Length: 551
Image (cartoon, rainbow, N blue to C red):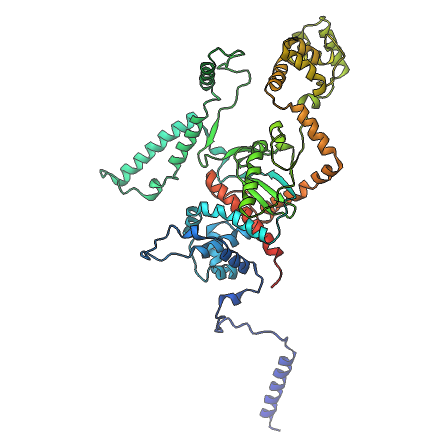
């Protein structure tokens, strides 16, 4: 055989053997041209969250989003608010809030492209949509809750209330006192004048740039912070004296008791306001420091459906109890939920006598807080020996305070409690049943307040408070506490209260850790409240999606 032909045959066989042993792989030709699916709905699998969001938006009343558009069709074309709303709902449901990151996802993420029908609104358009439709976005919470009611997901036999601290879009170090704010206003005005002189020269400056014409600029925020401090004058010495004079004028007589002093024994820190977000407040974190933020509140069912989403800048949960209960009832009525609320659960942060006696129409279970005199440990034997000498007159209260390293007020209270002039020593304050006859005698004028204080082992102001409550028909705090403790000790209520933690805490865990919402993006109580309701609305939206039957 011809050597040349033989060489060609051997080369062909080697190539064939190599090809027959190669792995079976799909082609990866990036220059290959493709015909994309004719419909964007073919880009995602059935049952995807994006399609569910589109279906929900079709069910919502979004007419308010269209009210600010011109009806004559003039002007530049804008993006459909329903499309923008679908993008916003999907973004918040999946833990995305940054307008710039949403803009990037509208080009890179298939789900976002389906929601936006392949449109690409920029981050400024997205931010303006969220800002201009603040009220309409807040109202979505009730509409989504109504969809959950229709789906049978809302069972209000048991509802838990709680709050969580979240950071504001502001720095703790941006807090200023009233004097610092006044100086900042002058400095800001001087800086503005200097910049305008440099920019406009001898011109009037009617054509101010947008950043100075915008009411949300730094100068406006400083003025708002200063205004809030101006309104809170009752804590100042001048404000307290003016309030005292007003009350004396109304009563027609001088008020008794100690008058306010310019230098109190326990002076408070100067009041401050934040110049970045004047509505935000310093929030303590249970011994773990503080944050500049808000105290958002939520009420949840056992199915983790949020039925109330309120915002507060008060770190004390107790003040938010009544507003949350009222909002819960209003939201359920608006959503078409006819059944009442069976039991309301709340932790000790909501405990006050007023909250415990509020008429809610439901079984109310609030964990109580033991008063200080019940939490105070019994003094040691050495201290009791010193207190006994004080009660016998062998040692003055001030000298005993120096010996024990405590205040003479503590000596006075403890000596009366453990070694009263009359009766048996009281380790704790007497119960309501024990002290009621004594307080009634004081009210009838049969016993002086001082003698009643000695007999009960409490201070005179405490006796005065108890008499005031008795004469005005106000509930006694200890009696209300004892009644609630007895109520919580019942087997049925004890079992109900144990379900509080798994009802409400997982919601905050999902919002903060799974979806990453530990800090609000917007500023101002109205804007942050709208954002909080949107976060809670998407929580219910996800619950509704996961409960929907597979298509």
